Length: 291
Image 1 (cartoon, one colour):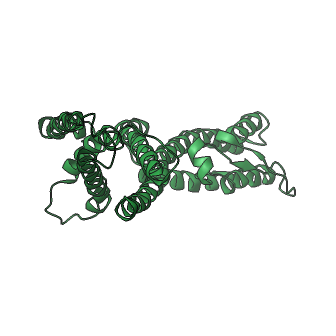
Image 2: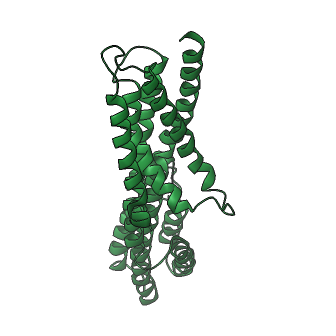
């Protein structure tokens, strides 16, 4: 689906965008020496009206995506139009302003529009690239399945830990208790593992257990020092279980990281869009009141 956004209906909106851009350039070129290009000419007003209409139309995509019962086009079609028509604003709005830049509300609206379009480019990249990365990371499973397997795996670990001496059992339970799967937003964005573990049950000090490496290393050393055959078998089983747990946690964290990549651009795109709409309203009011 994501690849088809650009090809929607045999490039319908690409063709429409090219036609609009050509028409806008032709309109702009109708300026003459007696009436040099600027936003206050007849041509400037027409280009400004087109730009404003596009901004309002494209903002509607956020509403349309949540109206599943709407019969006004498809989400895929709206998104394809959003991409191409949004990109066309870079030229149409520039023609409206006649490429004139100054320190005023009009230029602020112009640069906010550019920021919105550029953040949209990142959004397009994210939604075309990361779903494939997410699918490859899951290797045929899903986030819910991995979380369920981790929970089941942990129950077996607790059962096996009961066959080990006290200090090792408490160490294992500490590793389970202090495992970090999500963490704060910046940790999700970096895919950072903040898991920790207590080396001594009576100690408050926590040391890093990144990627379950500490617990795996300790269990590996404990196998050769096991008290009896039963404990040795349990420790070997625990090593296998923690190795699997290590792999599952990496998948889960990577999934969370990818989902954060998909969401992070909205933290910029939506506020910038709201700021653009506010600046656009002020821009229009100033034009009608003072020009």
